[in-house]
Length: 463
Ligand SMILES: Nc1ncnc2c1ncn2[C@@H]1O[C@H](COP(=O)(O)OS(=O)(=O)O)[C@@H](OP(=O)(O)O)[C@H]1O
Ligand SMILES: [Mg+2]
Ligand SMILES: [Mg+2]
Ligand SMILES: [Mg+2]
Image (cartoon, rainbow, N blue to C red; front, top):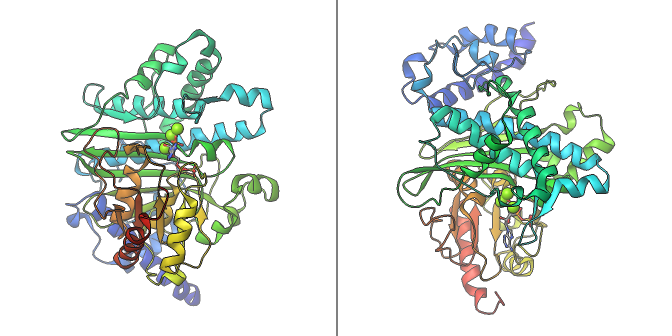
């Protein structure tokens, strides 16, 4: 018994310190609520640690809305909703909900016949894919944000629009979107969110998607949403992300990144390629060894970023800390560092980054991953560098980067363009003044070396 306590002790105190840091993060004025004696809480923590309850409803919550029962057992008193960042809380919950929607669609896509897949995956004018998940997530997030903050107060910049859904040949896909959105919203209460009293009509779903037509800019507050980032990865059964951020007067103030196929533990990253398919083929879905699905979130100026496992309605996972802080890697030796980049060579120049890697002394193979999962990998310390150099003329969009940038910055890293300037989210939907490419690093030393290498080799590149 005493030996057990000794072994569990450090975990409890680590867990306790995470809980206290998390409370401070969510509730800047919460010192009066924080417990004075960590040890006095330990036995209560241990007795309830095995249970994974549903999260309480945030409107009627008597405990902190993002805490599980282990946190409740700290008896910190009932913080009021208005004391914490309601925007962050709703954003995390709705991204959790959206991830659940995506998981269902991805599973059905993978098991579909070729003809059924054609209905679910469409091609946009630029030949990029769009699926019922992209439209359904956009409708769901838009509806939930409008429901909580009022449709007049909510301004959203997002990737998708209703154009392709509005002609008569798209009836099949539009019906699938409406069905998917309504199925998802019936689960809202499980994620602590209010859903509609009755199923949304086609018009309401189109309105929710179409409402995300803000153009951004330097004044005021707006949300930036990429409903499915890395849609190509999504349709291939691989990595993708749901990315939601809040931008105020041109600065990203909140970021939430849902990464449904991202492993909870770094060691599993080596299975990155066709991860999802491997999981379904090689292991039973409940296997802890393959545990995957994380939601990352950060708030500007706190110096902290956090990770939560994906809530699974029917599943239960062993996950110490439940909500835990993430931090960038401390590696600053290029020989030990790993860099991430897009999978598709049409989205970045693999040959240019290979040259940079060689000149800086990076020895590890690049980690090629779809979507903003790359930003999450740097924020969690799973890799040290992310580089992207799109072809000349391509304009990066704010929803492809905003949530990831604040995540890395608050986790201790650096993100700039290739000229060393911060990304500018105040210029509308594009990162208009971006110089050449994007460089995100775990620390200033690696960042400086990459910038110097870009300057040295840019002139002789064909970019
Ligand atoms: N030509 C071109 N050049 C550069 N970037 C482009 C280009 N076309 C698309 N995009 C954007 O890239 C987003 C996907 O980025 P990834 O890092 O996931 O790329 S990759 O799929 O791994 O290659 C992708 O986001 P989603 O559309 O949300 O998937 C696009 O916004
Ligand atoms: Mg995207
Ligand atoms: Mg997208
Ligand atoms: Mg797209």
